[in-house]
Image (cartoon, rainbow, N blue to C red; front, top):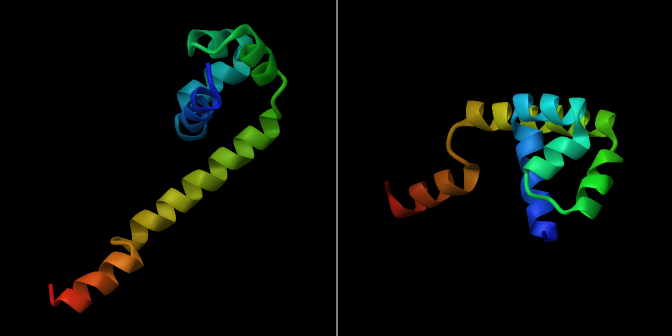
Length: 84
């Protein structure tokens, strides 16, 4: 496994409440089922669960705010510049 695999798994944990709940209930087991190595599973089992929940809530809030704004500002500017 690589740091990319860990980052990908963390992205799942941040965005999928069901996966996060399973992880919190059995961190090493869920990390193993995700394909992480034994050392990575051990490291994930030691992660800050409160911090994980806080980060997930923060990302959810940001996604919700982004959805309310619609199109990103840079795309709106480009559309105006191109006359679309």
